[in-house]
Amino acid sequence: MSVEFCGLALRHPVINGSGTFDAIAARRAFGEDLAASFPFSAYVSKTITLQPRDGNPPPRLWEASGGLINSIGLPNKGLEVYLREDLPQLADLLGLAADGAAPGAVPLITNVMGASAEQIAELLGACDARPEIAAIELNVSCPNVKTGLDIGADPRQLAEVLRAVRGRTSKPLIVKLTPNTADVGACALAAQEAGADAVSLINTLRATALSPDGRSRPRRPWLGGGTGGLSGPAIRAVALAQVEAVAARVAIPVVGMGGVQNARHAQDLIDVGATLVAVGTETFRDPGVGARIAHELQEIMVGR
Ligand SMILES: Cc1cc2nc3c(=O)[nH]c(=O)nc-3n(C[C@H](O)[C@H](O)[C@H](O)COP(=O)(O)O)c2cc1C
Image 1: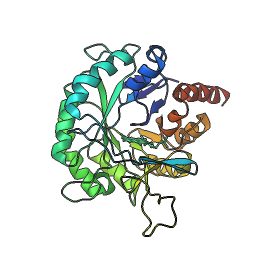
Image 2: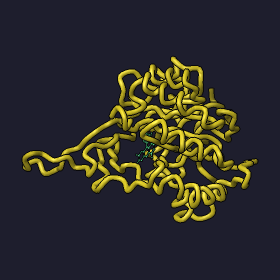
Image 3: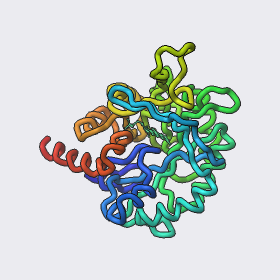
Image 4: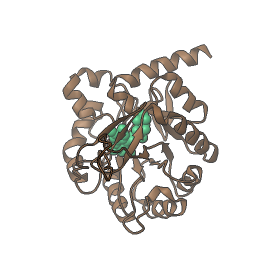
């Protein structure tokens, strides 16, 4: 079951989706056992930005049929506090030594997002200096302050930004693509050509919900942020199609995610070309789901 991914030796191919499993909070809730039997083979942090963000006003969630629309708005403490306060706690609970050495430990992937090449360069440079961080995932579902267009939505813009920042880190760089684009395969190829070591997808699909009070005029959006992102089983078929399209275009490893609830869903993504599978929304129902899926995957592979 062990997998080599961007130079990291992982125990199995199941990791968490960024923003859906807070390891520090999980340790508070589930105790030290969490560290001893961590459910994922690598841990992806939620998105960290240069400055702290409060996130969107409530309501932040809408339960859709077979899924969830979230408008959390990427609240986080900002880069400085993440590095000072969260990183040592994460290193401790994942079993990482101070120099980042990780025999038997769970490698840490830090997810970052910036609104310009300058911001992203600063985030990558700061992460590069920290040995506890094994790899960086760059969330490109962020409007560019200059163009207003999501950085990852246009292959040319994505390549331009990546070329400008790639030199700021020698750590593996995973580009988390946006699914809200016309040609995700072209974006993945642009990322590869601009120096990405891997791509991950899919992020949430842009979605909205109207206030349940159908009589009010004009109808109001329910979510405080106006729109949100759809995740969970409702997006699984879209994820499979996009992962297949991307894997057919690039030679670098692909991390597939979107609606995975069990090993068969994970196996589908692997069969269309994913090297790793990430689980997001399902962890809200079962925080130990990563370990369960890894175990079930092994049974499927033995039976093949
Ligand atoms: C509540 C919530 C918060 C999320 N936060 C982030 C985030 O901080 N950064 C990011 O790159 N993706 C974020 N995502 C997207 C997930 O990592 C994942 O790409 C997406 O939810 C699809 O997987 P799933 O259907 O298994 O949830 C978030 C998703 C949810 C539901």
